[in-house]
Length: 561
Ligand code: TEU
Ligand code: CA
Image (cartoon, rainbow, N blue to C red; front, side):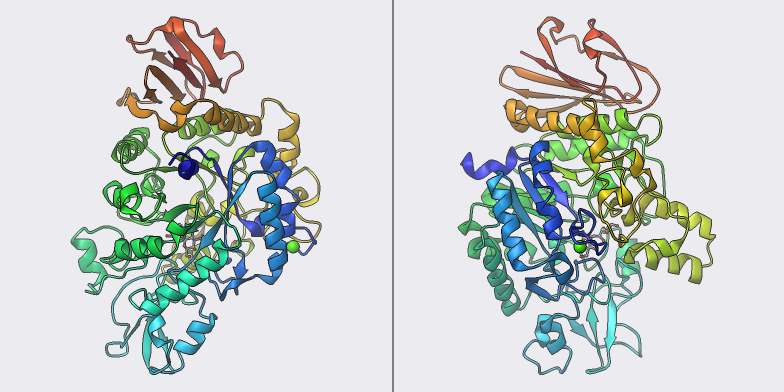
C-alpha cells in the first residue's frame, strides 16, 4: 500500500496555463511553453503537476467552462502537444494531474446545445430545469459570480440552474447517463496515462431537492448556500466513480470542496470509504473576511484564528483522512501579500509562510510563482482586469449599489483572482520573459526584480528555500507521517507546533510578524540533541540557549532525537 500512497509524500505544483509561458508570441500561455519549462520544475523538485483546464472552451471563466472534454483549446495547442507534455514530464519523474470540471459544462457544449432545444430532447435531463414563478426565477438563489443562479431559456420557457456564470450550466448528476458519460471521458484521459484528477467543486454535484429560499437558509444558519455543498447523494456518486473508474488506476485525486467541514472531509477522504484521496477545504481562506459576508468584505487576519483552524483540520484528519496543504491557487490572492509582508520583509515572510505550511501533515501544493515570492498586483483601471468574478462584483457594487469605486478597488487589490493570474515572471526582460507579444493580462511591474532568473542566481532566494523544503520531505519520514500538535496556543505572534513519530520530534517555530518576540523551547525537549533542519535566517545556529529571540518573520525547525 506504500506505493499506492505516493501522493502522501509528494509535493504538487499548480500550473495555470494561460499565465505560465507563451511559446508563440500571441500573449497567451500554452502547452509548448510549459514543455520548455519542465527542467525548471525538475530543478525545484516537485513530484506532481496539477494543470488547470486546457480543454476546448469559450473562456467565459478561463477554461472552467468546457465545451469539449476530449479536445485541447486551440490557443493552448493540440492533443499531440499534450501527449508530448505528458511524456516529457514522465521522463523527468513528474506526474500529471488534470483538472476535472464536471459540476457544469459550457453552454456551448454539445450536450447543452441539444438540451435547450426542447423538453423532449434526449439531452434535456443532462441539465437542471425548473419553471419560473410569475416571471421570476424559481428561487432567490444567487450565483457565485453574481445575479440569479437561474437563467431563462426562451426556447422552452424554463430556467436552467447555473451556480457560476450563466455560461456554466450545472449538470444533472441524478441522471445515470450523465454519470456514465463522465466516467467514459475520465477513462479517455486516464488511458492516456495521466496520473490523477483535481475535481472542480466536486462537493456541489448533488443538489438539494428541497429548494429552500436563500434567506431562510441563511437565517437557519446552515452556512454557505442552500444548493451547493455536500448534497444528499454526493458520497454515493463518488463511491460509484471510484468503483467504475478511479480504482482501476494508480492515481491521485483531490476534490475541491468549498464550504466543507473537517467532519465532512473525513467522509470524503477516509481510505476505507473509497471516495477521494484528499480535498481542498476553504476555512482558512475565509478568516480574513467578515464572517457571514463575502470574501470582498475585508477583515484583518487574527493569528489565533489561523492557528485554531489549521490545527483543527490537522487533528480531525489525523488518522482516518488526509489533508491537502495550500496557501495559493488561481482563485486566491498571493499569500506573501495576504498573510505576509510584500515590502521590506518579502523574502523572510514568504519563507516563513512556506515553513509553516510545509511541515504540517498533508500534501503540499505550490502555485506557480509562489516559489519566487510573487505578489499581488494593483491595476489602477478596472478595464485592466480580466476575471469575470471581480468584474461582476465591481459592476454590482459600483454601478448598481453606488459604492465608492476607491473602496471597491481596495477589495479587488486584496482579494481579486487576477492577483494570481498575472503572467509568471521568468526574467527582467520584456513582459517578464513570459511572452514576446502583448500578454492577455499585464505583467506585475515588479517583474524587474522579482523573477526566476534572479532567484536562480541567489543561493538565499525563496526558490532555493522551497527546493530545500521539498528535499527535507524526502529525507525525513516524520514530515510526512508524524503526528501534529500545536503548542503555545495563546501566543500572540508565534505559530509553533510539534510533529512526532516514534522517538523523533520536530519543533517548528514561526514568528508570524515583524516585531521581535521571545520563544522558549519547551522544557521536556533536550536542547543538546537538536539538529537545525532549516531556517530563513542564515545564522540561526547562533541561537544556542533554550530561550530564543525571534527576529522579524523568523522560522526555525529543529529535529530532536
Ligand atoms: O472554484 C470554486 C469556487 O467556489 C470559486 O467560486 C471560489 O470560491 C472563488 O473563485 C473564490 O473567489 C472553482 C475554480 O477553481 C474556479 O476557478 C472556477 O471559476 C469555479 O470553480 C467554477 O468552475
Ligand atoms: Ca501562446
